[in-house]
Image 1 (cartoon, rainbow, N blue to C red):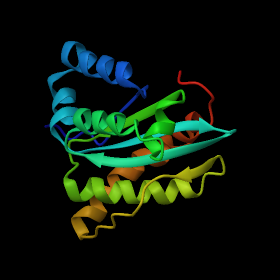
Image 2 (image 1 turned 30 degrees about the vertical axis):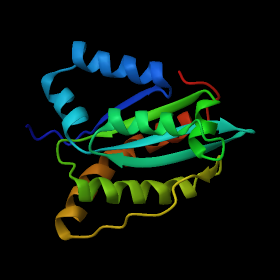
Image 3 (image 1 turned 120 degrees about the vertical axis):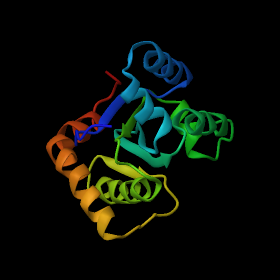
Length: 167
């Protein structure tokens, strides 16, 4: 692995076909490094969808983004769960990977992204049930690397949470 500090961020249509297309595009067109980072390393993900003018989000982390996303879709049959709402809307899924991500770091990023989303006026509901605070000096350094990138791209991510359609 190199020393590039820029995370890999993919935005896909948040449905079974979008996930299938994402997986196929990785296998057929992505570099070996990108495939490895997104399919073998822990990732952070954000489901977001518009509901009555504002947005709802779910932020998660996983060691297997494909399998975890399929589990979310399977849970959508229960009308009481947030996944059901997700599947009824035009939704986006952001998948964020980095060669320095480990389980502890992705838990921490998940937690901090929940805190960031609480400050976004157009986000009316965050469906996570709990936070995942983590702490260590190495995590703080890795966090600083991630948020150096995130700070430069925050506006674009938030803008896309306020769009009506996945682009």
